[in-house]
Image (cartoon, rainbow, N blue to C red; front, side, top):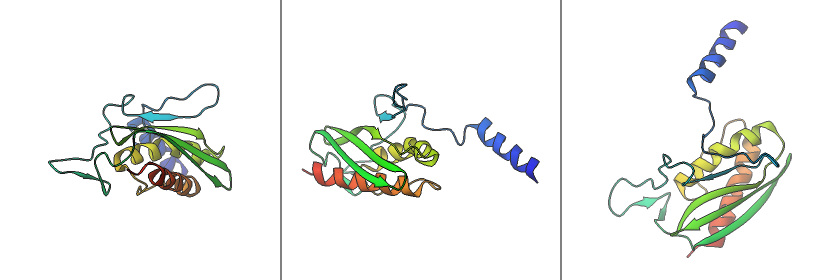
Length: 149
């Protein structure tokens, strides 16, 4: 049974199915990540398939340009993000603080990618990283409120 499970894990690893978003850049000094549209042009964060598109419940360009920050506490530490808004849309997400728990660290890439697509706090989160997902959603909600037009 253990051998079968080990084979399954290796198969997932080899297929890349569980790989993080490749465009997230780890800064060697503090291991904090960032994700941006410029770093990953394959991320289609418009979610738009035609004219008059609504993205994540928000009309395109729903935010004031600038950089906005928020942070939330988890049982494992502070979770803090900064979001750059360009042309009224979330363009880049920086992680100012990520709790030292492994689930939080591994979830960051997926959470940022989901947020860039949704353009609001209504994201799925990451299974196994509930505290990080909830803190990230809270941070996104704070930023939505700060940056509304």
